[in-house]
Image 1 (cartoon, one colour):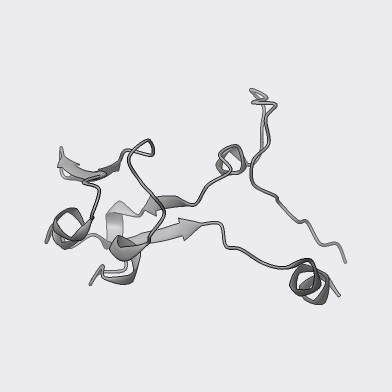
Image 2: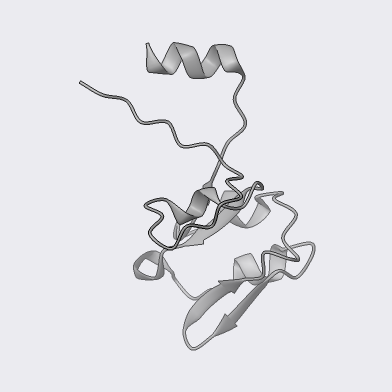
Length: 97
């Protein structure tokens, strides 16, 4: 049995990276198009206007996103999720054990 732990904020930017979500150090909002209701609630609730709706998809501007996760918490179709969570060293060790 093996456990793989991915940490965020890798500065290397390898072209063959198996986990490109780990490159940014901040929380990232992920969009799952198949679950989207196209209600635009996420676009309207975002305090920094980081989400836009184009071509039947939600696009996240990571330069504007502050990681508040209001869009994720309030998406009625659960089409948004987040990549990253803050954990203490003790929590991570407990999970791995």
